[in-house]
Length: 296
Image 1 (tube, rainbow, N blue to C red):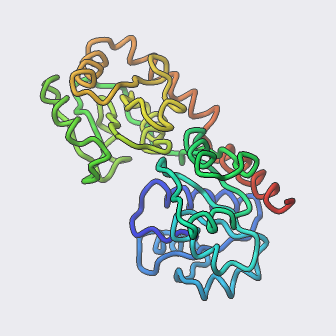
Image 2 (tube, rainbow, N blue to C red):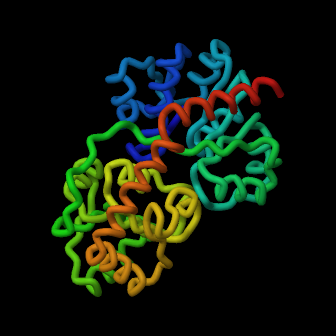
């Protein structure tokens, strides 16, 4: 179950996981918001899809071995209406609420699939026992890689109005470095012609957009926050920066001026993706978590 209104990283992970489960001969269905992008994408992929709501969950959960809630509202609906064991994917970096309802809701789930060690720690700090938590990293769907790296291509960043996502920092940094940039709402397409991907944020559970760029052979500059240091090793598979426009500008110029470094970052990043962030890794880790939930 995922009730997100947009097609963001979490919704793409839902589709990818369902594809993996199907290939591994597990039956699955989706409960999602009618008419939203995930709804249409799941139907187009041939998955049984029902409108999100407590009644559909109540009726159909009895036919399932397990319910997997992928966002906060799905977690709430599962706590109230699921008639089977349910688990929750946790992608966000902010703390758990301290209200009585929040504490009740978090105690109801059988297991948590945290998208990073950082997110797992926020769950523990919120009172979830560490023994209930598995770290299950995102996967990257196979994507056409960009061509040979070209320093004349623009920098690319996510188009987001969210003040937590650092758009203001990017604008300042690009001005200091005198580097052209594109704010992208079609990331896989725009990364085909990118000199770098700049992921600046003040809060981040993991950073699936950075994983996509790494898989496509685009060097990554990312904020040293949240779960991003778990996927980007500074100076090895990308560059990590503090949220300071001058430091970001220096990192952008460093990539353009040192093609040997940039080539190493690209190669190491691709190897990192292949060794840790494939659909096979996602599927095995998820099924292992399901098994622990059902054994409790």
